[in-house]
Image (cartoon, helix red, strand yellow):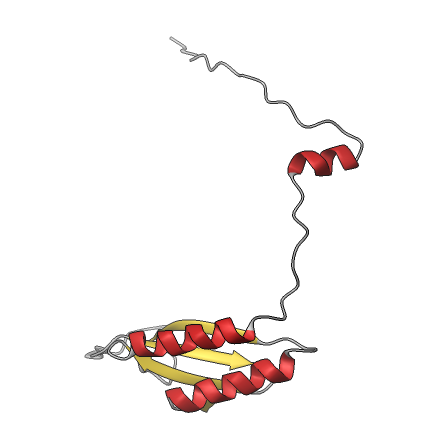
Length: 126
């Protein structure tokens, strides 16, 4: 995992989008990051560890993994740049056919399902 600065991460993410635009796929994950680099042991806990700042860890991969850490102070600025990048590069998505449910059931040869009213009666045993 290559940990990059925010600006470098956005540039590399743009390159990944362009590389995977015609063929291939990429994965982006976002999670809370507390600054630990090693896992917590199962038995016992690490005493005295308090994260001083809330942070987010963003990872992007297409086989080669890049990542960055964003602090809560800089999240608004980063989110604006990140959302602009996503809007600009998500133009190659396939559009779905929009069919209503009634058209789909009629195309299959069946009727649209009818709802029946059910009256609930309480059952008491003494």
